Length: 261
Image (tube, rainbow, N blue to C red; front, side):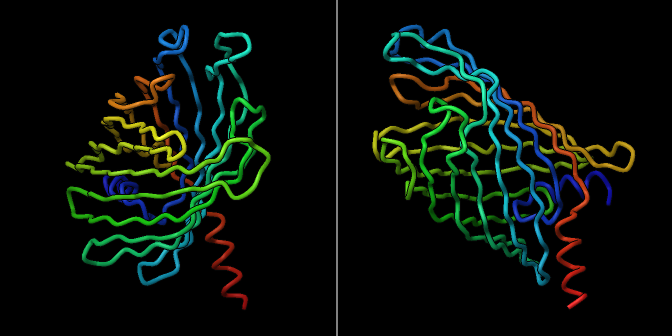
């Protein structure tokens, strides 16, 4: 496939292409807590994806997300000041079944969750979260638009706080050709326990290239948060994303075992 064809396939959330996504996210915070406006953070979010193509436009996904915090500000109420935390956060994941039709209609449904894997209590909730997710989108030659919501509740764990969070992701991408993409994919959340929204405006630009035998997508994005928790929340986020397309070893294993049977 050409770089332009790969760029278009990567814009499809139901793509069967295997990839390793590295999201470098730099955040600036603000809020009413002491010294909140001076806080900065850096997170590396690693999202591997090895979808299994089932035929007939159907695909099975199991997509984890590993958040590595190199500098995450957390408020210590006992000391009355912020500390910088380093470590692994709670690992998110989704398991879904998707269908892409020849007309360009894209559908998927599954389960979203969060595992209590944080290396410190400041970086995670201490709760196992689970809930439903679905996706609906329309893809044409030059664009894709869609909606991807989920909701998660705490179902187990040792954390003290109850958790009930809705995530709403609208997305749209323009694909002008020559392997470029211009998109917006804001991820808004509503915390039902604290009754607070986090709502960003988002813009991203990306370019897909083939280096050697490996396709790579490089992109940059920016968020400005028009709504955030009053006490402490993000104001800006700047992201640099690197996505190599890799061999789908899981799909190959699945197909091989299916043939053996």
